[in-house]
Image (cartoon, rainbow, N blue to C red; front, side):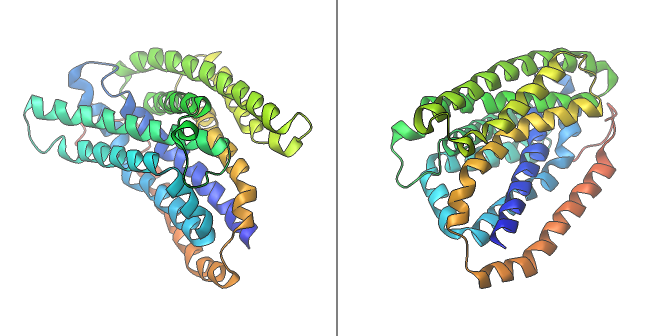
Length: 319
């Protein structure tokens, strides 16, 4: 049963990065295309998905706490500075979304539009540090600043936001009106190229770290590099073809943005399986948790069926 819940944890974590990832990427790039007057339609393109997507992070926390409570405590305690930074970014981003249209003044709207960008950036960088540290191994407590801000972790703090931005442009090119698509396509080509270079460097760095610490003969230690190689291949495929905003582009960007989470999960898997919850706790989690996860999936499918179409410039938006 612990293996089953490990697989479920991996699926919901990947689901979070794929689904909330395009919202974070779109938030990071708000104001980087079109004009200042296009902010409303830009927010309307991604904001309807926010609430449904955020539930996936709640699901990740629920599965981790329910199925692997001992290791969950170590991860949160060991990476506490980045957990706090991510929570602050989450609150600031959501505050920007909720407050931006509560008044009509231009200065008010610009302030909260910047909050969306800053909050998305804080959350993206925090996730980058979390992924980078997890790729170095499960964090014990306490972690020294030298480990928390190791060069490889810093590299991922830059790489992951670039991946999220590339994923965001792939999504925006599907949702924004036609007059904004050329700007988004040009931006998408640039950020995808940057993400490709950074991901290739991070993959090479991961190989160097693994060889230095485990040696070439440790095949299991090399497995986490496979998702990263898949991310490089997906980004190269996107970059070498017209950035048309089709379903293939979005699917490939989803592969790229979820690869770091999958790689971190492969590194953490042995430690998680070594400290599962008790059989009784897993039985209770199975009885109640699976139904909740099914509900999360149903809500997500409903949100996509309802909102997956181009935004009209004059379309009403609560956000």
